[in-house]
Length: 369
Image (cartoon, rainbow, N blue to C red; front, top):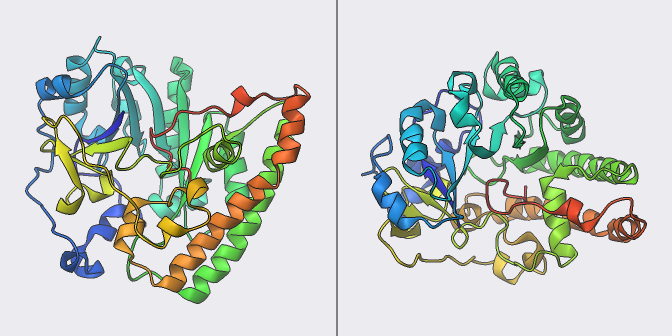
């Protein structure tokens, strides 16, 4: 099982697309739909002893925030308290404080997701001037120190910049990231839908996805399978290697979130919504969550999995907006599907193998953008 654990609600960044905006009940009207519980403290007060009793050997903790490294003290307490327990550690971070964390703790991280949106212009626009240089230099320093575990470049794609192909290639060219995942900033806030603007974005985005898939295949012909998570995750389901049909992120069945007061909820973005509490650190069995329509009866459900539980339940965009989002997902699925005969030939020829497409599920990349 995978568990995001929120170390703090504080963050040292002010990203334009911050998820906290989507939880503003006054803006989104969700306070009329759900019961919000703001009783949890800002910083984690979770007992390490309770974590020990709740977790099993082989489980994975993903440190999360806010920005988790803002509360390194709690992270250190948990890592020290759970050492030799068989618990794995991962982190999702904005990367700004990586140079301030003792390397002995960094090297215990099995995987890291670092938020970076592409080149300097794009990243600094979204996340603040100086962010790109700081984060890239911090990741380079980790590599120089000998960190060899997976580092995922975790991108957010929005309509201000619409050049996914170029940005992915840029991040790959740096030689410091093992893999890349991207998420479209769409459908998570109520008041940001502009049909004309998003329609234009979707067309350009789809074109960029098509170019990126061609690049992905060209690299396979050279014997290299790039770990671009949306492509790899979708292909695993299309090929039948992944038999799961629910959400790729595992939200509400294989991946839960431990809040700052020890409640357990379906995912980080729902950490203070009572309807999505699944239990607590003393629960023997956690509640699971199902999708609502239109996802539940969609022809692509078994491959897509429903994109996002929060998006599916909150329904912040109008129907025509959600349909545009779904069209980008269908476009992506169909274009990966179209490449299956070519991929099978490359596998049969020995140029690549099925093993090259293996990946760990549920540790952070949501797969479906």
